[in-house]
Length: 417
Image (cartoon, rainbow, N blue to C red):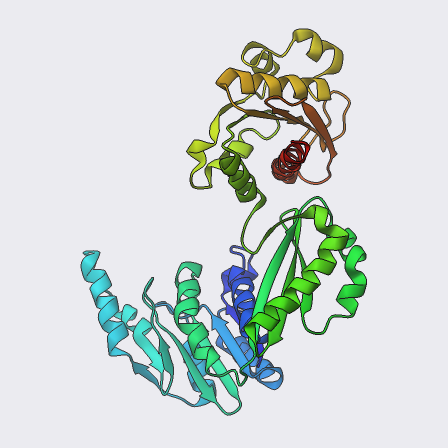
């Protein structure tokens, strides 16, 4: 099947919200072996929606719509599709009862227009909404399959996972098993990564290799198709082996993990505690750590040392260090890492000091960052970064580099032992 995803909503065109639904659905369809060739966004206008449907029908045999199933006048997706296909809208009693129960439990008055959410296309397969009110639906017409999903991700994602994928699996006329694996890289740019494996990408057939850059890191999605699941896994292993032989030093994890989660796993496994002294990151490193469950066994605490006074008075950075080298220096980063570890009796101290922007500091350009890493029983090391980009990007990337360097130094320490 060749699919097109049509997101309906003027708020998307105005930039008020991001079309994250298209990304999620594309990822899920890849696992089903369904090609996605087009993403379309259209506003809440029936004529323009009808126009993009007609275009989609000429090039795709699966069209998935998100949004426009709500109770208000501008929610017009199913009405427009019904007219276009010459189908009636029928009241789904189960959905109506579910909506009525929702308002009863919430002790709110249900207005008449909420009944509109229970209308579905005749002859359609209903996709229940267990996280909202409007059900989804799927209907075949001619050579095309139409799937309608709600716009809010908290409703759409579980609906698609629990009901949409099962409905689509029946449409996919193949007994091939499709296996995907995402390789996650850090410390190498998208262009450099592609350069290292360009011949593998150009020669790809099965498995396929799909590069993707996001949030300061890179991923490769490997997808294999075969009638035998074990054979498909073996095919992925072979391609991954070829990739690791070239850029394996930058590979930190698989699938939906994050570099913060990987660091947490290592610290838990080694039973190590950590502390942080954060200047330019302003607590962002500790915020990222505390977003991972189980952090209390790892994170002892830290200090946001944004001013020189806190660096000197709380973290005991020598005044002469700041006077001679400045706060944006490897010398200051070294003392911050060592002293914050001592302050809270942690096995590891990590520090972040630098120039986030928008202006230079101490004569050093925006993006200059020093990360100090002090591991109990090891010599303190300081890594220097020369980043570029916005203030927030520099802060976020500094945190990820801190995780990356710490993982590498912990691995090196283990090898040395």
